[in-house]
Length: 222
Image (cartoon, rainbow, N blue to C red; front, side):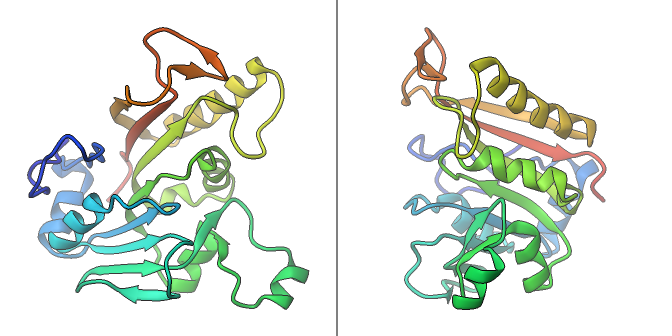
């Protein structure tokens, strides 16, 4: 795992979005050959340090954020901004007919539209939508098209369209993490954000955090 070799500023004010540069998993090779592709899913965050750093190292970076002013912006040679929101479902056909340029899509649909078969790194900071998006990636076999996942997960409430008792919510979360493991994604980094409330499903828990950043590498990735 390495971040410092990519970052020009390793200031602690930036979140530790860590990538795995182990030669077995090809990302370091892709970066050296200026062939890596990164998708970043966000909701209005001003912190794009990671995306800029990866773009400066030659990666083709696509940042998806519904708050972007224009539909598509080429920010620099390798950094694109798109006014699109990644969801766990595509718009209903009736809605899509009325709004042909709707800015909400599933990740699989975006990949097909952009003609991208693979993503070397998928970074997601979706403010509690991450659980349903992750479920969609698993159910639609999009995971096998991704080399590394860097997800910020939120535990202070069940998340969008996740409901039930606390135990059923935890089982749902666990089933998704277990599915990643069964698809040969290996967790290589975990960061606990101590600046966030110490909450777990709305309960105060000592020495916990309501927000973690988890990084996995697809060990099948070539």
